[in-house]
Length: 252
Image 1 (cartoon, rainbow, N blue to C red):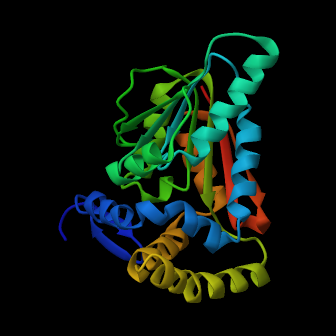
Image 2: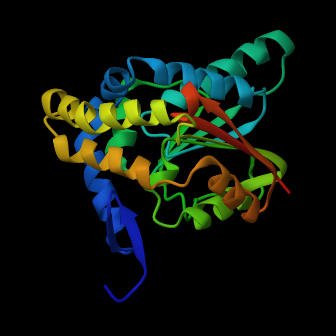
């Protein structure tokens, strides 16, 4: 490789090849993605997502981007919360854009069904199909580590946010305790690919997902990247001892 490289699991690949490789992974897992999330985390991912939605606190009339939104699991939470707030206080409808690079994931979400506040589109996190200063909030959940150019995606998130807009990124991260790290590594590398093989008939894709988590920056490093992209108040909240973390910031 003579040009720019990107991580793909434990491998370094030509940066131009990564989007196609990631697309292949999610083409394969799209139809069983939500089921596999429940099985792999014993349902704990739902608690992390609920906490993220509560931190976002969607309001009537807001424009919210759910980037790498996949099957719309997070967007449904946002739409329901905005509607409940609207019923209490009135105001215009919220709009939740569900954007994902993978058409199969979007198709699985549309098939599952949505809410009137939700709009679906295939889109690249590095080149969002939206004007500058469009959104009140941008959320990306378990998707940023699959992006080829993470700093570029963070700058793009800043571009589409209004000044003062909220940035939230829920992602697997680095457990703080050595004991938790050891247990998590053992579970991740031995159990998750086996679940993928048995339930989704796809060990390789889930091996990649486990490896991609290990290559992702730790909490402090990623918070610094968020700040460098043009966000203030960059910080994080650990979930389950740091197995996952919610990173937040405000568009300057």
